[in-house]
Length: 94
Image (cartoon, rainbow, N blue to C red; front, side, top):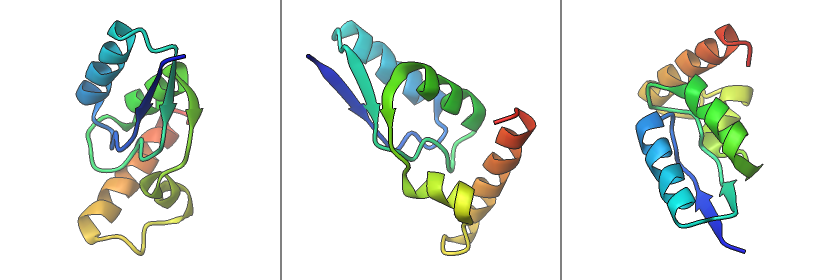
């Protein structure tokens, strides 16, 4: 069985779509995500949706954890991004 292992998406939808297309072209049977779906990039809702659709296994990365538990330990720009992602996901009902 061929697997695609992805991580550090950081809400970059364009890159995620490219990687998933490549995995499909390579005929990977399952995609496994090692985390950090959110944080930093412009498309947290779309990335979370796509990862839920395409990934058989999803682990929680440190930015994903910060979204749930708080980002006080992260640098100010990252904290701001995490807070914005949290609001965007809440507005989308996620």
